[in-house]
Amino acid sequence: MFAELIKKREVLDVLVQKDFKARYKDKALGRFWSLADPLVMVIVFTIVFEYIFKTGQPYFPIFLLLGLTPYRFFTNSVNAAAGSGLDNAQLVKKVAFPRIILPFASVLSHMRHFFIELLLVLGLFLYFPAAFHLSINLLWLPLVFALQCLFIQSVAMIVAALNVRYRDTQYMLNSVLLILYWMTPLFYSFSIVPRKLALFLQWNPMVGVVEGYRAILLKGAPPSFQLLGVAAITSTLLLFIGTYVFKKYEKLFADYL
Amino acid sequence: MTDANSIADATRPTESIDSKSKMDCPAVIRANGVGKRYEMHRHRSMLLHDAAKMAFSKYEKNYFWALRNIDFEIRKGESVALIGPNGAGKSTLLSLIAKTVFPTEGSLTVEGRVSALLELGAGFHPHFTGRENILINGIVMGLTKAEIEARMDEIIAFSELEKFIDEPIQNYSSGMLARLGFSVAASVDPEILIVDEALSVGDAAFQEKSFQRILDFKRQGCTILFVTHALGNVSRFCDRALLLSHGQILEAGPAQDICDNYEARVREGRLDAPRLPYETQVLPLWKRVAAILTILSMMGVVIGAGIYFVLSSMKETAGMPEPNAIQRIKRLNENNNNKNNDSDALERAP
Ligand SMILES: Nc1ncnc2c1ncn2[C@@H]1O[C@H](COP(=O)(O)OP(=O)(O)O)[C@@H](O)[C@H]1O
Ligand SMILES: [Mg+2]
Image 1 (spheres, rainbow over the protein chains, first blue to last red):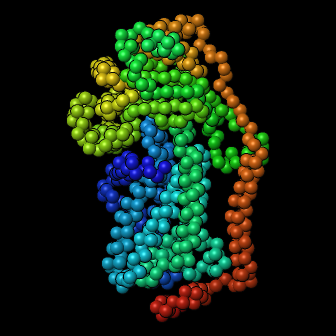
Image 2: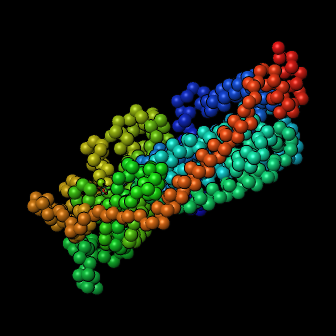
C-alpha cells in the first residue's frame, strides 16, 4: 500500500499542489492568508487568558502559538482527509490511482500551512529573543515532528477511509476534535493538570508533541520522554488501525462515493 | 489450426478481414466468472445508525448484483462494443477493467496501459487554467510531468482552445471542457482504450475529430472497448459486440449481428435475463455482539470519565464562597508559582 505511494508520487504531488493552490487562488494576499487565522486567534486568546484570566504564563503568545500551530496542523489535516474522498469523488470514480494518496495529500498540503504558520512563531521569537533558548536539545525537534506526523497520518487514514463508507464519521470527528481542543494543553501548561486527570489525558499524542515543542524552544530542555513514549504508543496503535481500515475499504472507494 | 478454436470460442469475430490475424494475438482482457455486487440503501450508511441497528435489531444487508457470471476474453487489437439497456452493467464492466472498482467474485486480468474515457476531465479544477488542468489531468491519468510538457502543444492544438488555454476553466462551456478532456485522454498512448458514452458532448466537428482519433488508435493496434447507444457507430468501430442485460451477457458475436439481434429483442421485449440480481444477508451473531460491546464501551469510557470529573469538581468546591477578585488573583499566582508577575498583579488589585 505504501509502496504504491512512492511509485505514484507525481500524482501525490499534483494533488497537494492543487489543494494548496486552490485555497489561495482568488485571495488577494495569496498564501499569507493562512497567517490571518492564527494571528486573530493569538490576539483574542491573549486578551482572554492574559488580561481576563491572568494566567501569568511568560511569553504567552509564543507559548500559545507553539500549541496552536501544531494543533491546527492536526485538525486541519484530519478534517481535510475526512473530506478527501468526497471532494475528489469524480477522480476516484473515474481514474485508477492508489487511494492512499488522498489522505497523504491532505496531510502534506496542511504541512505546508504549518510551516508557513511557523513564520509567525519565528517573528515573535525575533521580537522577543529572550524567549528563545538555543541548546543542543534543538536536535530533538525532528523526533517530535516525526511523531506528530505519524499521529496525524494515522488518524487521517482512518477517517479518510471510514468517511467514504460511513458519512457520519466527519460529524463524530468534529465532536472528538472539539473535545481534544480543550484536552490538549494549548492555553495552559500540562504541568498544572492534576495528576489523576493527566494520567487520562496524556494518551492524546498532541499533549506530548505540544509540550515537547515548548520544552525544547522555550526552556531549552529535552522533551518529556514519558509523554513522547505514550504518544508513540498511541500513534503506532492508530497506524495499525489506520492501515487495517484503509486496506479494508480502499477497493470500495468508488462503490461508496 | 483455427477450426477447433473458433468452434470452442463462439464469441470470436468470424467475418472481419483481420480477425484471422487477431486470433493469434494474446488475450489482454480475461474475465472468469466475474461478479460485482453493490450494497443497496446506501443513503442510510451511517456508522452510529448501522452499529445501533446491528446491535439492537435483526440487521439485514441488501445487495444488488450489477454483474454476475461474466466470462469473456478480448484479444490484443480487437475493438469490442458493449451494448444493452440502461442499468445493464456496461459502465460497471468498464470500471472493472479500468480498475476503479474491483470484482466481488471471479477474476479479471487486464494487461497493458488503460486509458479510460469514462468521464472527460476527471479531476479538473474550475479555478485553474486550461494549461494547469492539462497537467493535473495528464498526471492523474498516468503520464509523467515531462511527458505532458513534451506533448502540451500537441494537446492544446488538438483541443483547438489556444485562445482560452490560459483562462480558468470555470469560464469554459461544457463542450469546451469535453474538448480539453478528450485531448488529454487521447494523448496518453493507451494500449487499451475504454470509451463510455463520452463522445456525445462536443460539437459535430469535434465528435468527428474524436472518432478519427479513435480510429487512428485502432489502426495502431490499440484494443478498444466502446459503450454506446448509437448503434450506427458500433459497426463503424467494432469487430465484435457483447449484449448485456441485467448484469449478464445475453449474446456475444460479430458487431453487426448483435446489433440487429438487440434491436429485434427491444422490439419484442425479450431483454430479460434469467436471474434476479437481488440478495439479502442477515448479519452473524458475533458481529452483533461486537457492535453492542463497542457502542457500550465507547459511551461508557467517555461519559463515565466526564461524570466523574464534573462530580468531583463540585465536591471540592462545595461550600466555598465565590472568590472575589483579590483572592482569585492570589490563588492563581500561587498555583502558577509565578515570580515575575507577582508585583504586577498586586498593584492592580484594588
Ligand atoms: N456505486 C454503486 N452503488 C450501487 N449501485 C450501483 C453503483 N454503480 C452502479 N450501480 C448499479 O449497478 C447497475 C448497473 O449500472 P451501470 O453499470 O452504470 O449500467 P449501464 O449499463 O447503464 O452503464 C445499476 O442498476 C446501478 O444502479
Ligand atoms: Mg452507463
